Length: 154
Image 1 (cartoon, helix red, strand yellow):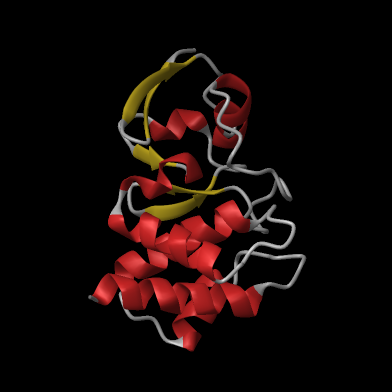
Image 2 (image 1 turned 135 degrees about the horizontal axis):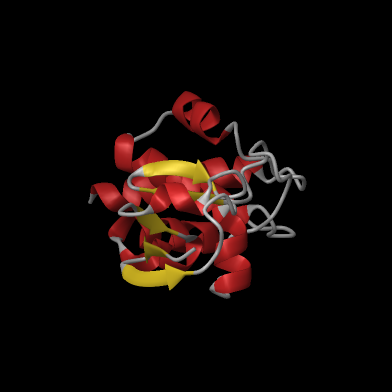
């Protein structure tokens, strides 16, 4: 089955079955390996992408449900001001340790800053709770989100 998708502002056609998780379409069919496989059941957040303006777990989102929807992956995060501010803050705060979860962390943080331009620690904790970092870089993630919010406020 062929499905037309909008990914990172580009129209693409994929030939996967409608029930195929978006994660595998991105990685295996489109060669976009930034979105990571973590748990496969939508709990760890490593595979977080944006569908419209909302976070979505690519490992449990069937590609057939995405026709006519805008999908943004980590590869497209830097296309807007929020994404660029987060990327700069992530680097400045030396956030990644192993780095495996960071794509999902960044994608969730971008949604947070779109909806809450100056988040509190509580806002960050609540929003980022669905993203697991096995290395425990949560303090650096929080600091980077605050730094990006400050940069965006000027």
